Length: 141
Image (cartoon, rainbow, N blue to C red; front, side, top):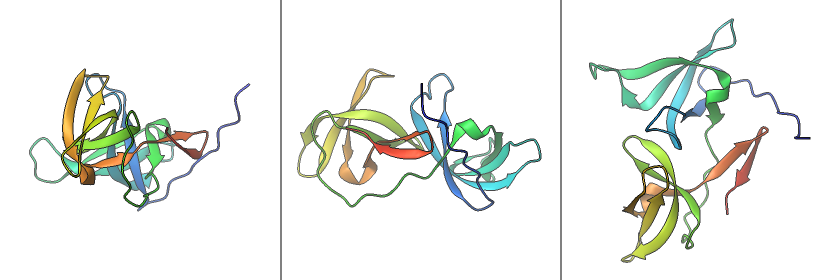
C-alpha cells in the first residue's frame, strides 16, 4: 500500500514547475508562476521561459494540479558523480538525464534516455534531480 498523497494547494504568485507528459517532452520541467486557482480546481500558470505563439508575452496555460510541482530546492554547487541523475537546462526547460562523463574543467556529458542523446553542458546548466513524491522532495541518486 502506498502512502497517502499530501494535498498541495498553490497560491497566486507561487513558483512551480510544470511536468510535461507530451510526446517529445516527457521528462522535462518548465518553470512557471501560479496566476490563479480556478473554482474547478485547475490552475492558471504563466511560464517563465516559454512564450505565446506570436512571442508577444509569456505563455499562459490552464493545468491540472497533477501537472504541477513546487519549485525544487536549490542545492549549493557541488561536483556531479558518474551516473548521477540530473536535470540539464536546454530548450527553455529542465530535462531529466544522467551524468556519463566530464568534459574539461567544469562541463559534464549528460545522457537522455528519451532521445538517446549525449550532450555536454556547463555545470551551471545542470542541477541534481529531485523527485516530488507524495508531497515530499526525494533526492535522486
